[in-house]
Every structure is written in structure tokens, then in C-alpha cells.
Length: 547
Image (tube, rainbow, N blue to C red; front, side, top):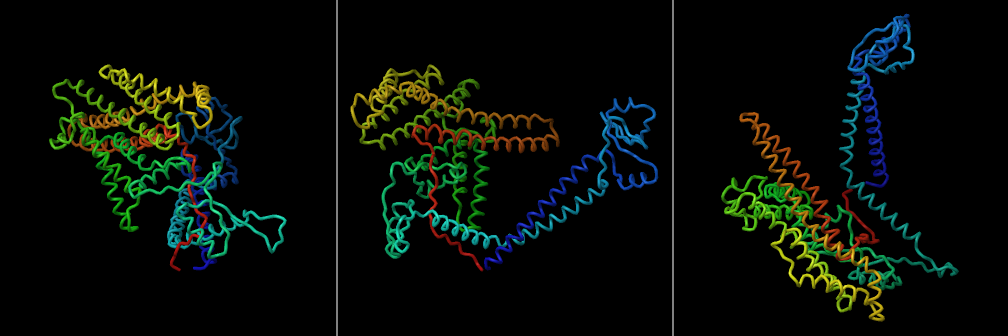
């Protein structure tokens, strides 16, 4: 297929889109008129015009009941219909003073219905034409790719820098950009083969290079989530794909928190993965990610005894055996005490995850700064975070978690180390300390923020508990219906709607809370701003299509 034929195809598609839009606008206008005239019943406006030509002029009005009742007797009205607050009537050979008559439609109600049906038939025909034209979409996409490549090359050509005040036969022009280090040899080889001059250097401090992340088969499955969020690490920032994936999987499991929901997601993931394999020959990363997240949810729900909000004591015996002791209610305690203890253990786990993730952030910072003196500032902050962890346990989980004396030394000593070494980038040691203390207020507020960051991980417990409570509430609603067929039908509807709504809310919670803990708390302690832009190489792209 040549470019002229492809251009004709595009014109046909655009023409179909214009026709679709026109028909949809006509349907909207007709539907609006139908809604306006519905109370009047089906009448033909041509009949009113015929009567007017023969001496009987009927003017339609929608009058408030109070206005209708207060009209003088010389105003002759023909009552059409009474509504709750309005009266539909026709003035005979007169007008109603101070009132605006109803605008007559162009067609009757049956005429509008017929018009809408015709437009819908036309739309169906256009959609069939579009479906037929869609078979040529790969060819159009290939041609579009070529056009975009041409535009990219022409833009680069226009923007090429040229030496001025040089004879035309000696003119030199050049283009500059970024290339991955492992592909620099390809550029050099191309320059040698084509007689180009090439100069390759590392990016300068004031440059803003694009970001190219390369991950293994496991870590790369988090990329669909990054694409959805539109987050790209800066060139000089960390690639946290692997750690992000690990912690996000834990957050996802704890927020959904139910093995029953995990099973449904796992089945969905398997079906989608099989379909993807049949269609493309491979399983897409997004489906592998779904399989991982659903598996983690299934495991977490199983070890905590959460299956569609069903009480643990009525679960089958094999499901109860899957629950690990910290999350199994102690039968020697009262129901409330046992529940409180299990919840306490989940909260404890949340804070352990918090200190592990944020501790990892500062360990990465220490490794990056090594062997500079500034590494001790990150080590100090890590010690302060560890001390704050014990304070959080005491304040949130109660007096059974006492604050050890060394925790206070860790907080004070860590903060002092941060002040001493934060600005030790060269020059006078003591002057650099004074620079740090000049920012005392900012640093102090950051320390308080770190304290709140640890507490922030309690959201994993709170959101998971809310989901479990909602699931249990819908179960109770379904079981509370009167016995009989109505209970079966109504119960099924309540369970499907209730658990479906809970699944949707959990998915939203993952975005709001699970993603937040990674993008703000974790990445914040890494000093990341997600200020990068994706590496899109300037190259000739080709996409084979069958002509």
C-alpha cells in the first residue's frame, strides 16, 4: 500500500468520525426535545398550524398552578394536563399576559423517535465501516511511524548548529545529544564508516540527561506501574525498581489483606496471562506483576486467616492451620483481648517494615557518599531513625514497649552527627559545622518529619482493617436476611456488590497509600525528586508491515 492509498484511508476514517459526531449531536438534540415535550403527549405541530390557518389559534403554555387559577375569565384556556406544580394548557385565540408560550417543536414525539432510530441505524452502519477500515490500522501505524521519524529528523536538521562566517564549501554543522555508555562504540563505528567527526564526553553537572533504566527480568515488571504513574528517576537519582517492587508487593498484600480477594486476582491474572501468551507469544510484564501481587495477597491473607471476611472460627480446619501464631487469636483470652493482641502484632509489623525500608534508604545514601565525610551525616540520620523507632513503639503500641536508654542517645547522637558532617564537602571543618547549624530549624523539622514518616506506616494496618470490616459487614447483611428464596437471591446480590465495591476501594487504597509510602516516605529519605525524563533515542525506526 502506497502513501496515497494510506492518506485516502485516513481521510475515510476522519470522514466517518465527523459523521458519527454529527449523528450523535442530532440524537442529543432530539432527545432534549423529547424530554421537553414528553408531558404534552404525542401531537403534530403541523395540525396546530392547520388550525391557525382556519381561524383557531392555539398557543401552548406551561403555567404555575397559582398563575393558572388566578387568570381572568376572558382568557380562554384549554386544559391539557395537570402536573404537581404546573398546568399544561392551550390559550384559544388569545395570549396569557406576562407569560412566555411554549416553543413548538419541528416534529411530533413519534417523529423524534423515528429520527433517533434512523440516526442510530446510520451510526451502526458507520461503526461497521470503521471496523472494516480498522483492519488497515497496522499499515497506517507504520506510515505514521515513518512520518514521525521524518519530522524528528527534519526538526534535528533545522536545529543543527552551524559555524558562522565560514565559506559555504567549508561549512561545518553538528548535532549533540546523549547516548548510553555501552552504545558509545556503535556511535564511533558509525562515525568511522560515514566520515563523521565525533566527540564523546561524560555529562556535565549543569546537563539534564535523560534516564535509561535497565533491569533484570524480575525487577522490570514494576515498570508498568511507573508508566501509569508517569514517574521517572532523575539521571543522578537512584534506580529503586527492585526495592520498590518488593515493598510495593508487601504493601499491596497488606492493604487488600484477604486471601479470598487474592485468589480472585490470581485467577484473573492467570486468565489474562494465558490470553497474552496466545496472542503475542509472551506474557506481558503487567500480567506478571498482577500474578506476583495477587500471590502475595493470597499468602498474607492465608497466614492472617482472612478469607472474604469470614470469622476464623468457622473457617475450614486446613485454612485455620495456615495461620501463623502471631495472627491466630489466643483461645485462652477473651474475644476482645485476642483481637486486640492480633491487631497489636500487625501494627508492630507495620513499624518493622517502616524502619527496614527507611533504614535501607539511608544505607544506600551511606554507600553513595563513601568515603566522603558526609557519609557520617547519613549514618547519624540512620541512628536517629532507629532511636525514633523505639519512641514510636512506646507511643503507639503502649507501655509494654519501653523506650530503652540507648534509644535517646541514638536520637541525640545521630542528630549531632548529622549537624557535624552534613556540609563537610571541603574547606574549614568548623566553618562547615556552623553552616549546618545555620539550617537548624529546617533540620529539626526534618527530624520531626522522620518521626511522622515511621508512624505513617500504620496506614497499612488501618486500611487493611477497614477492608476487613467492610467485608464482614456485607457478610452480616447477607446472612441477616429472612430465610427463604429471597435470602439466597438477595444474599448473593449483596455479597457480589459488597465485595466488588470493597475490591474497588482496596485498589484505590493501593494507589493512595501503597504508592505513597514508596514515592514519598521511602524515596524522600533517598533524596529523590523523580525529576527525570525517559531516554528516547534519535534514530531511524522501522516497523515492518505486510503490503
